[in-house]
Image (cartoon, rainbow, N blue to C red):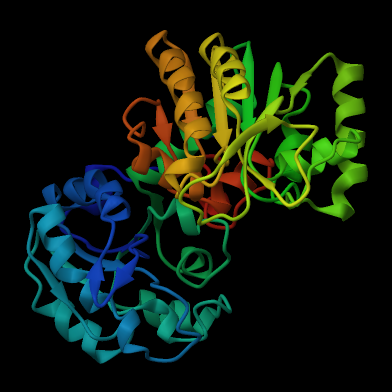
Length: 397
């Protein structure tokens, strides 16, 4: 999959609208994580070097079409200025005369951050009139928000019917890395799946079953598979309506010679937020009253060994409730195997969302080939879907 990426000539001296994802965590008006801002730095630098006048547009939170002061991107502007090491002006609107005025006073090679797109309900309705208003002052549109590319919004879809449109460098990297994993992975190809629900990963399992060498299943979703095999899982959460699917997948994998590995031991506890008293128990004999909250040490070492021996690893979903140090060990140990795979020349890609958060929190984000910025977007991409924010940018379009 090849995208139409902007060149210097495409944007030089132009007024460029750049779709970014500045949907960062905010607490009391303070930005809690700058990862998403940092991710766009290369694209922004290239646009500024081309002497473009660049307006950044993004959503923040879920204001549901109304102005919510706590969700204003004005909180993000000063942080973006520090991260990007470049002055960032702020405009209190994203369409209309205010934007035109702010853009007119913007010098070439400078940045303007527009107000939250989702203050307007038309944004999430992919409204063509709103897209036209958004695009009106600009010459070129650059899409760099991979994490929003699975949504057909006015700023990720309709606008590309109006302005000459190109992919940014972050979007290009995301597509290149994920394409390399899912289209022609070098074997052994190890798929590591975790997180809470089987239902979130059905599409990925079905799409990649024929390409994977081994599928390692941890996290909460493992208990649906364990339950399907007749295990006693105590109070562990599982999806009763997905037990048949789990059985079907295990049978299909066996027929196709694909290895599915489930936990052999787990770290069990009475609650997610407990501070002591965790127990390591067999995965198929969890005592009543306890729930599995992480894969156990034997499982973690087994998974890590499979990952280390791989040539390609795709990891989506943590192995346990990593936010609690008592249940972070499984994810940490598996990450060491993935890191060794990377060091040995393997391609290792970590899906977005909780897995990306775990990578940063546990410190292995720099030890893999790529950490995706997109949670839902990376999942849908790995399911083989065509994403509305990417489809118009395909080079053969």
